[in-house]
Length: 250
Length: 310
Image (cartoon, rainbow over all chains, first blue to last red; front, top):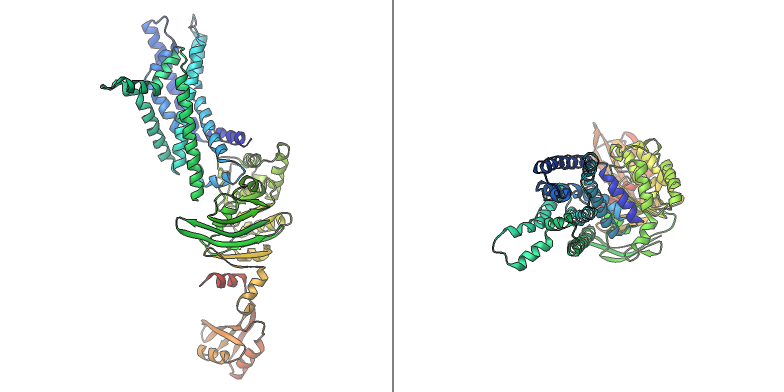
């Protein structure tokens, strides 16, 4: 009950600030440009059987979008409460810390997912206006959406954690970006030489691009699901502990 | 309603509150006074369940603040210092959100929000964004938020700080009104406010309770309950020695010559004795031209200064 009330307020608050619209506009623009360029490429190369999803997620600029969005969404969630002092008002209402942390997390995650809606529109447009329409593989689309949600959950939890550490939104954003970059950076490990097979196996276990490639081909792998969910839960627990600690400090 | 026993709070080695105990009964309006840094806000934060105490027992409405924190928080309306609010929300939206959060049942939310908007005179700004409101309105939104779930106890940390005299008066009237149905603990620096609204005063200084009494009794504690003001044309030293020679006068303070040779003297008598006649006799015997002779009751301000200064 308290969770639902807080969640509604968190999600709605994004639409009260200009940042949300700027991020939304930026995402839609970048996704639109990618989409246009990709369709051009596919037409020029005269692919017959390629999955649009598969090509889409192999496009490098796509990752910049993923990395850049999250810090902008999450930087204010706790920082602003500490800066304005509203955290005191919030935590003296009959709510538990867990409610607050989860509401902020799910609010941010929902907004993160909203930012991907333009792609869905682009793909729908492709379906409607090309003839013959390209084949639709629902398993690929569903798995890709699941992977983006899970990876987004992990990144958003890192952002929420960064935000609970500081009053300053800029610091929270930079910290979040750095943490996401480190997480994401592991996936490039395979390009380094002198890696033994165990290390490579570890890298592929945590590598988001590989997870997305698998999903894009319609292959379901339960390992990344376990990985993303467990790390997200762990980071949210850390967030709750820090929140409690900061409150007890006064 | 509030029972505090031996409450202590230590912040990284600094003892902000040192073993204070006090009670607040149902229906009282208690003023919490003390200089800046005395521990008022800390105590209020602990009562509201925001900060944990380092030591001591606190029960509100029968529930322990630490172990039954959620139950306590349901029963109190707390307005923190400087009234932090979500500046991006509209007044109506904010009050509905807070009512929902404080577990007001869905059917009653609309009714409660209307009631507190009426009480706090917020009708004309109900659709405005809180960030655009003036300090006075924000203060009232904070107050409306504190009462939206109709709590038994209101804890208000400096509810009138930063308001203009008209707004202070309207908040004061509001608090007096609320006191008919609620128990209220409020902190403030405006002593006239306490004299007019509170049934009891707690004075806290350096983390300790210095006094707990009605405003009227507190002023009686101050040097005999008042002083006599005398304005004569005479040498200051002369006035002091001649008046202090009187048996019932404890102390004479000369206030610097205000106007040529005229001097003002503040005379403190022994408790309960009226020395105006004796003073007049001295003045007449010495042929000092007299311009003023008046009795002044001690104010709460003097009581406050006396209790909190070393």
